Image 1 (cartoon, protein in one colour):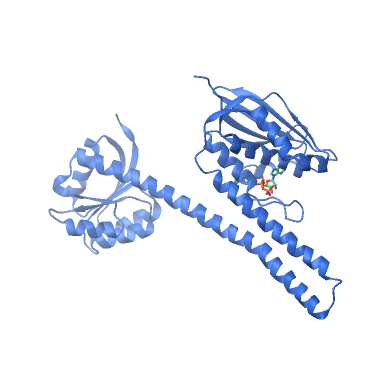
Image 2 (spheres, rainbow, N blue to C red; image 1 turned 30 degrees about the vertical axis):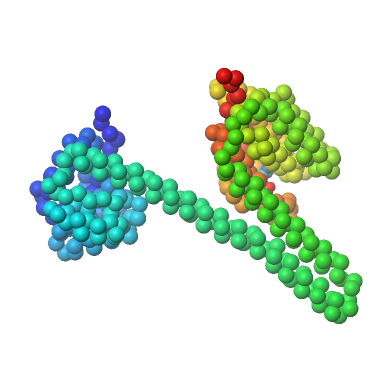
Amino acid sequence: MVKPALSILIADDDDGDRKQIRRALKQAGFDVVVTEASDGAEAIAACEGEEFDCAFVDYLMPGQTGLDSVARLHALRPHMPIVMVTGEGDEMIASEAIKRGAVDYVAKRMMTGESIARIVAGALERASLMRKVAQAREELESFARVLVHDLRAPLRTIKSFAGLVDESIKAGDIDTIQEDWSRVVGAAERMDHLIQSLHLYTQADAEAATERVAMTDVAEDTRSNLDFVIRERGAQLRADPLPVVAGDRALLTQLLQNLIANGIKYCEAPTPEVHVGADRAESLWRLTVTDNGIGIPEEHRKVIFLPFKRLHAKGEFAGTGLGLATCRRIVERHGGEIWCDAADPGGSAFRFTLPAWTDT
Ligand code: ADP
């Protein structure tokens, strides 16, 4: 079987050695587009313009040593797998190369189609894993940054209004205390809400149960959980007969609750109307939560599922920005997808898929 085309860099000053690597790649069955460099500087110049799927770097090259080249190429392209090509019995060099960023090494004499196939496959797998780890780390860093910011905001409010209350007490000016104190309590409540949302968000990532869940029961649980908000806003919540799915009841209740609560919250009509419906999409059920709210511009319909992404200021609509991110995690835990469309004649339609329950 011919494998997909790979872009390969071969950095070696010896024409014969470069040919040998090409031949081994061909024997391994790879369809390759090869770029050749005859010294470290040329290899670096090539990598400035392109990230290769894999680079073979000879240990002995004119100008700088292969080890320096490995370090510089790794700094330039941290996710590009680099394989050090060494002479016979150069284990020390090989281990040094790995310390500087190479993923593997191969002795020239050992270069066969078989060994190259193994090395390249391993290098590609590692590179893809490293990319995933780097992406997860970036996501975690940005998550932590926003979290710290959002947790500090109510704390700052608490600190400054508590200071004002303190001053008023000292000055015996009790008239202003009540208002300042209510700001302290409000900020503490926001912080509590954020911590609770955060807890639900992290829970959504835990292993989900796969049990028989009647979504009609879930909708009823949701209705009673949201009873206060529904009454307060005079909202109408209608649900069609809903299907039986395979999933985790507690998480699915959380999911439906977040979507329905948002449908009621992000609505300026005198009577918020939220409808839950379902239709079959092959082995999945697709559920839709439609509202008559303010709607979401098309360009924002993807980003709203990112943690802490909010389209409104806190003063306009209260929230933490974790609700839809939690929904996405829950749906993905169940192997489904979630997205948002515009509703007709106005408002939003949140759709998600869940696996149908099958009695076996
Ligand atoms: P929160 O409601 O806590 O801000 P969410 O993650 O639930 O966080 O929602 C993210 C953003 O998406 C909200 O701030 C809001 O701007 C928008 N949004 C969510 N649901 C709706 C909806 N049903 N109608 C309009 N806008 C919505």
